[in-house]
Image (cartoon, rainbow, N blue to C red):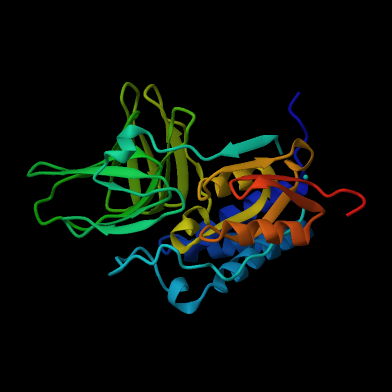
Length: 321
């Protein structure tokens, strides 16, 4: 027997899906009528939509210069700029602990790489734009036949440019290739032996090393390993918010949020089992993880237990505190 679906959480997932469809210029007009009908059908839909829009409002509070950035090159990458707006929501997921580890040797040897807590924007030889997330590395192989990015680790966001030579653009991972079809997309090695892909514009084709291809359209995400590709799912409309200096979450478990935040922080960040399921929503700075942790403690019955600056545990606040 399948577990019962929480109507409020289901409505929230649907609200995020509508957000994706309404942001896609190619489908926005067609989607608007369906969205209006969905919104009017149930008060739970209205509550869910308000929550998603509240997160949008938090993201809009970024400093103007930062909020205007899309995926554009910077003369000197201001990697340590601070996201000024953060907030948390409500909620109750799985035990998690997170610790910083040095980059694998393939990433240290990569032509372009970032350390923990670092991000970088790169203009590629063909004019395409690439954003490297924290602890990531890529090598480039642009020749007369193709434009190839080797993802050695971490996560990248790419906006491809038209090529005068008509060369295909692909990202090679340990599990196969992601072929761009005139697009803006994100690829991440997820640590579970898979490549995760999300498409913001146009489409990509997933080409597992030994499996059948799978196409993803704008507003879709999926993963593949060497043997197969997952069927498309609705994308997370805030998944690329790290490129603007923040992590945007909508009703996710605290343990999952801290696992993402730990990627930007040197040292050991641990989530106590008793609070790992707490649901949170909001925008959290990746360039100032101390501020993000302080906000958690100020808004929830939580406390930080620190042995050193590089060992922090988030746990339930003592009754006497």
